[in-house]
Length: 288
Image (cartoon, rainbow, N blue to C red):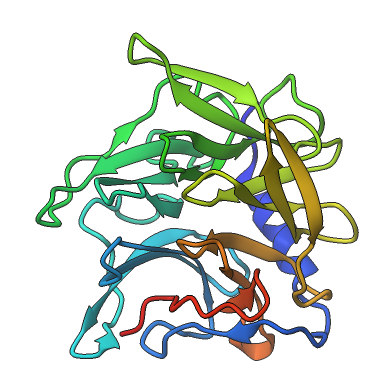
């Protein structure tokens, strides 16, 4: 049975309707793309000149991909990237390959019901030309929804999935290439995967920092893990607005800062910037 998108989106929207609380994160959404709807899940090209992100309506439904470029010292008015499927196809969760040679995203373009999200990869040439998206095979994709595909520099692909056989409502998985060029998928396991719904995981380029979006509490929040040897060790829940859900985390190249999205009053959803390392001087997000 496929995971139903309307139920998922409606639940997140209802969680975001509470009154805001104080938190250290600062609103970051560029003026050219900020609207009364929802902007989330940014991904930057390695040169910092292109941003692809998830745009949704005010209820965090009707996901689609949008692109903005750094032109003349400012982010441009958004438009769909050339590889995006036309509406009403739902697409979301862009994530660049660390070397910039491609981008992963999720799409329902293969499903007439527009409800099953699978992971796609689109190549990008050294000159910045986008190729044709290809749907990843099983066992990466399944009859259930896959979410937020993110690759580290070693080629490991992390994603969330509610497929059977996990620890809870949704778990975090990692896919690696085998010697024959196929994919091998394993559950990341505890403490990242748990008995609750763990549905998004952002991983640093060096594969040693992980930010989890999980329903461990009253709503979905951000949790910080570091890799010690072969194990993930939880550090803390990251400070954000306790009254709303967070979604779409993106770590800076040195994993010292984090972008994510959350509800922001009458502005609906916006991108926020928060420190991971106190006193970080990492120059990020990319200036334009």
